[in-house]
Amino acid sequence: MRHALRIYRYGLLVGARDFAIFWNWKTWCGGWMMRILTNVFVWVLLGRLLGSQEKLHYLMVGFAATAGVGTFAVAAASWDRLDGTYSLLVISPSSIAPALFGRMSVWMYGWIASAFVTFFIVSLAFQWTFSVLATAVTLAIIVLICVTTFFLTVAVGAVASLAPRIRNMCSFLVTLVIMAFCGVSVPVSFWPGWLQVVCYLLPVTHGLEAIRLVLGEGANATAILRQVGLEVLVGFGWLGLSLLIVDRFAEAGRADGTIELV
Amino acid sequence: MAAWLVGGIPGPRERMNSSAALRIVGATALTQARLFFRNSQEWTRVFMMPLQALVAMAVLVHAGRADLAGYALTAALLFTIGDMGFFVGSEVVAGDRSQQVLELLTAAPTPYFVVLLTRTLFVAAIGLIGFAESWLIARFAFGVPVVVHHPWLLAGALLATVFAAGATAVLTAALFSLARSTRTLQNAVNGPFYLLGGVLVPAAFLPVWLKVLSPFVFFYWAASLVRDSFAAAEPVNIAFRLGALAGLGVAGAVVGALVLGRMLDQLRHNGRLGLA
Image 1 (cartoon, rainbow over the protein chains, first blue to last red):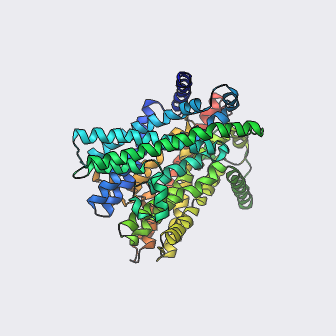
Image 2 (image 1 turned 30 degrees about the vertical axis):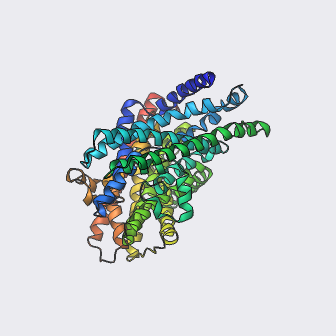
Image 3 (image 1 turned 120 degrees about the vertical axis):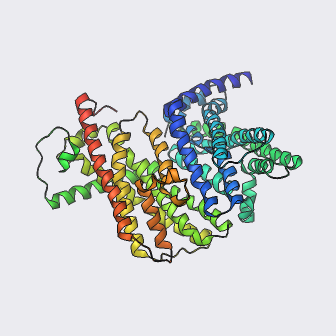
């Protein structure tokens, strides 16, 4: 475990270099946050178009809590293959997982920051105020949503790294699926029954439900804890799956000689 | 005229007749088509972007406002054309530079501006796929058949939008090619343009201090024209609005040509034309 944490730390340092290639603090605040905030406002204004304060709040919570969540990480899973360092990681005595988790997870910290800033600004813009406790619990659940989504992106990223050309497509699909099906834009109950089952197995769905309970009228602690518990459970499920497949996929590349083919 | 627009070191240029110009435009478009469809990073985007119609349609249908489906289609279409312009079109110069072909292209007798505009227009036109895909999503995923009440207006609006997007991409391509990281800028510009342009929700719903900027964004005119083509009501001021959309395109192309000329001059002067 100690070794795994050390490798994770070095992976994170590599990830920090990746992050710095895209953003410095000025471009992150002025460029990235500009993109995220304007995108959130584009969707939230639908509530105003529909003339419904309830819809406006629904979209506001959904899009602000998931602002930027899911971006970049899936693509980052393939960067070792493109850099030529993947085969070195595979032949090293350790599992590839901590290195991969480290390099990818820098984006997760970026999601947390994006969602926090967006939540703050959108609440101010629409003059929606919450109690200190509700705000603190909401922010904690946002962190949980980011972590569970990160585990999903590791699993999807592992699949995408088999064919790195589709990495950006997979990354886009992850964010689209979250936006469409996980209760961000419409309640999960809107979708057909079979799709709802899939939605409940995805991250974000339960976490967002918990946030809506926290920010809604007459918050019920048991119901909130139940949704948080389910989100944690879903997160562990995706963590388990990702740990199961990252090394297998890497080994498959070594076995059939495709490890250096991109 | 074109030579003046792109600036640069004057050299012996053949006078192009119309058939030669058409041949060059055709060959350039064909080359761009080959480059585009060979690059899965680029052609997959054109099929991914319209999927956002799924989200917009879900919100509208859930709210019992399937009659506003035209808004979802307009947004999906403009998201796709915008993405093609800002992401794919804007990368053309940076791509030429990194593949070491910019020196050859600028040394050729054909002005680089003509080559670039042809390529960005082709890429923007590919974005029209977004319309077909989002229409199919509305029809088959939600059972909402979106009727085009004014097909000629739609055709005119799409044509003018493609022109404006392609022409604006000349400007962004020139600007982005000098940036340290093209992706950073690509990620930053589209959101504000979509918001100001009222791509999904009309600009009338924006705060007053923000919507005064909207008419300067070509998406504003494009979105209102495309939306009107889905509405049963008779559209008004069509000539003026189409003119404003095309006018913003021309302005983008002229400023783009000037910036491109300055940029190429600068790179030649510094001897960095071939350095990416």
